[in-house]
Length: 204
Image (cartoon, rainbow, N blue to C red):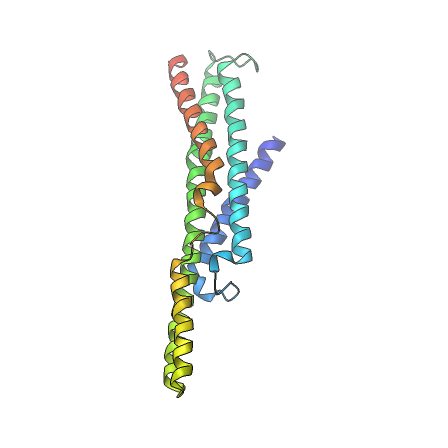
């Protein structure tokens, strides 16, 4: 019960973290503290993506533990659960339903959402910085009379805009960041499908 309670608390904190990232991405235009030359290298965004990646991997790993435990309960005599009793059958079906929904389905959804929200946040910060560069160029053209000086500044801002347009929209390569998550998620999915098929055969 203690382990399950801690997992539920961690689960809710993980969901809250993703909601916080979503709020940041929705209000990106209000954010002032970020790397204006390389938004994807902003310290707090890098740390945020690292935390979500680690939490995703850890939760997939914990989910694998729950699936393995339920496998032992359902298909072995290790815990002495008699599948001939109706109460046991209902309990096992209920537990497998929770596992399938909360771990096999929702964890990949959370993982994809965290990636997409961070990507959206960085993309909006890049667009914001490009917009500011364009505004500065217009101001310089209106207020500066020295043609050579204006041309130099324009060139600088144009180079910066090009660099921003080509900059990555995620702090690290997505596949590398989520490789462990994808692997464990695939194994969890296969194990759950196998368990459901086996459960269908032993429960009339």
